[in-house]
Length: 101
Ligand code: SF4
Ligand code: SF4
Image (cartoon, rainbow, N blue to C red; front, side, top):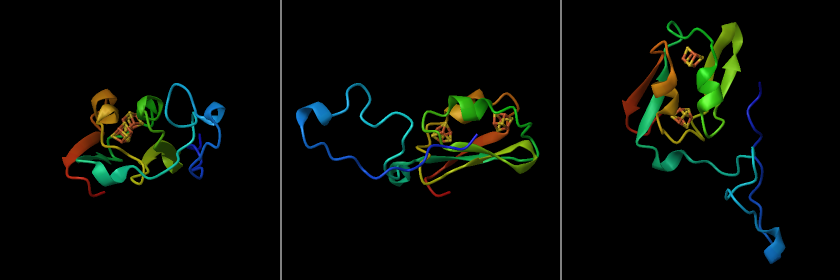
């Protein structure tokens, strides 16, 4: 249930080294993404049931499970897309205006 490890940026030396498809190596976070976030998800731990739907749908892999079946968001990498909030069936994630966690 651990989130992807941050990897140092990969600098291709040859054409064949460039990734195809997605721009990053799959499942690896390479740099912080939070600087351009315009909305920030907040988890209400009292509403959260620990269903982990947000963990499954977050495209950035920034949601992780913590103690007592609750979830935590790594704001260094959250883009503020709002998918987790939209998909939470228990209204436990609210998107707050602004990029500050
Ligand atoms: S989807 Fe909602 S209820 Fe489920 S773990 Fe995430 S925040 Fe908690
Ligand atoms: S707002 Fe988007 S990037 Fe941030 S935790 Fe939710 S799904 Fe992941």
